[in-house]
Image (cartoon, rainbow, N blue to C red; front, top):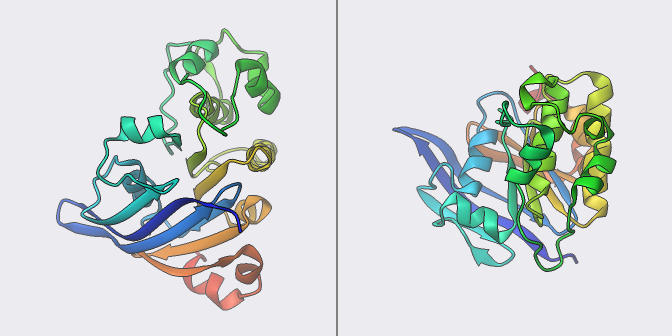
Length: 237
């Protein structure tokens, strides 16, 4: 049994008076890719933000490598080795690819793989030919790759990915899937929020379905793939 990298228990979070997360529990083991699936507004992105400390949890527990983190500020959570790739990408548009990567640099830590610019350009070959290009002059897919690469410069043990395939061309989506499989091979844990079931099936070992801030399913991707009524109830548009 692989060690548990990330564990969330009974997590509640609010936006103002709106009770968005209502007792979310999930976990990811070392070297495992876990998909958090659900429709728009189901609470997927809020769950990642609450884990990362960007939305302060009202109650519940978040443990990373056995350490409670739900009361820590986001910068301290990041320094522990939990990486976060936001849906909005948020690259520095005036900085070049190399400068964006430098912003994310942290020292190596423990058993986490150490990422260098050359290793990242091997992972994302599209970026290799645009080292001096400003982030604002890149396509959406290239910006998504850069955002992930910048997060990896922090040498995380676990990465939270928010909608990594959204709005990308099919060929870029396939490259993204291959990159996530590579990260898994490096021993990283990945928790990704997705609406794209096909993409999730290509990369994830297990899945959770969230609906109205509550977990409605947790199991293997094979179990989800074999249950058409479950997919129809919670994932169909």
